[in-house]
Length: 300
Image (cartoon, rainbow, N blue to C red):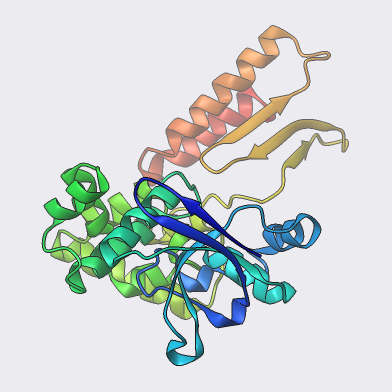
């Protein structure tokens, strides 16, 4: 299959290419460690059933190192095509490195699965490679604020041992990256953070990203909130379900059945929850006293 698409800026030639003759551009903004059979399973299944609907962007490299095409973006689709052993639909263009960066940014800016940490790494690579001379230049070409570029570059400067505590660097949410970067600004705080990250790594644990983050910023002196992948049910002393807990990325939803739930009981339950949550913010010596008060006001 081959077709030509003309636009005001450049010409795109659509072709089916062997995925084993394609390689990713070394400036692409995905961490290879996060692209595997597990993370790409839905895409692999979709491409097997329905084919590839959206082409990736590439440019010809004339058989360099055994490859014919260098892909600007489309690492996940490349992986899926290789797994399935099917041709990859590629839109071939003649683009410079700077033009490729703009095209990649347009493609990926709205995607939620590329983390701020990954974007920061990309910006840092561009500067080291001399594709841009300053942060201001990156901001101007991408049409973003200088403050945003500066902020993402700070995330990319996180110590490797801290990033390594997470299973994937892309697990680091933006608010976490901001807090971790602030910790690194002060010498003693940075040393504590690195020590905790090293201890966590040596422990061999592989917990949810939220737990890793809590361990890094809080240490082991507080009980960590372990976010489950599935909803949970809380039962009463007789085994009857009374509360459902729904775990989300940034919140936990407490769901109660409305049947037989009197307003006064609901108010008491909420008051008890407030007492316990406030206690979590207080010094350790107050917790036992507050938990006792909470227990007396509600069994939940």
